[in-house]
Amino acid sequence: MDKRITIYHGSEKIVEQPKFGEGKKNNDFGLGFYCTASEDLAKEWAVSSLRDGFANRYTLDTEYLNILNLNSPDYTILNWIAILVEHRLFPVKTPIAGRAKKYLVEHFGVNVNAFDLIKGYRADDSYFDYAELFLNNGISIEQLSRAMHLGKLGEQIVIKSKYAFSMLKYEGFDIATKNQYYVLRKARDDEANQLYFQMLEEETDGLYIQDIMRGGIKNDDPRIPRNISE
Image (tube, rainbow, N blue to C red; front, side, top):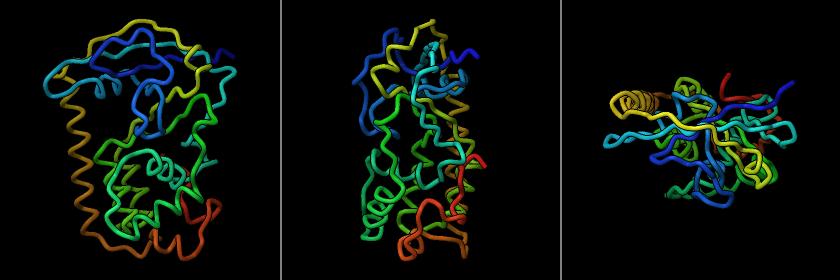
C-alpha cells in the first residue's frame, strides 16, 4: 500500500524547503512544521484580514515514520489537553489551574519528541479558552468534549523529526484569498465564541478537573472521553 500522503502548510509566504529546528516552540505540540491534509483548512490558516496567503503543498512518505495519532481511541481528550498546556503559553491565574496543569502533564502527558509525526486537532485561540476554563474548574470534561466536537476543529499534521523532514517533497502552492478564506476563518472563530459564552451559563454534574485530581483518576478511567472526534 502506498503510504505517501499530500499535506498543506498555510502561510503568509511560500515555503519550498521547511527546515528542521525552525518555528515556534510554544505551538500546540511544540516545535515542528504544522500542516493539514485539507487544502481549504490550510488556506484559512494562511490568511489574515489584511492579506492573502499561500497553501504550500507537499508529499510525504510515511511508511517508516513513527506516528502519534491523538485522535485514535488509544488516547483521551486529557492526553490532548496535557500536551497543549505543556507547550502553549497561558497565564496560571489560580492555584487550582497550577495544580491541574501539573497533574495533567504528570498523568496524561505524552513525549511528543519521541515521534516523527503527530496527528491531532488544532486548538485555535478561541478553543484554547475552553482548555483554560477546564483547568480553572469552570467546565466539566463532558462540556469540554462537546465543545471540541461541535467546534469542528481541523486536524493538523505536525512534522517533528529530522528524518520526517527529509521525507517531505515540495510540490507547489495555491494562493489563498483573504476575501474568501478569512470569512470562513472568522465564522469558525465566532461560532467558538458563541459556544463558549453559552457554556459559561450552564451547570452540569459532570466530571471536573478538581474531581479528577481528588479521585486520582488516570488515563484508563471509562468516564474520560477516549477521542475528541467522537
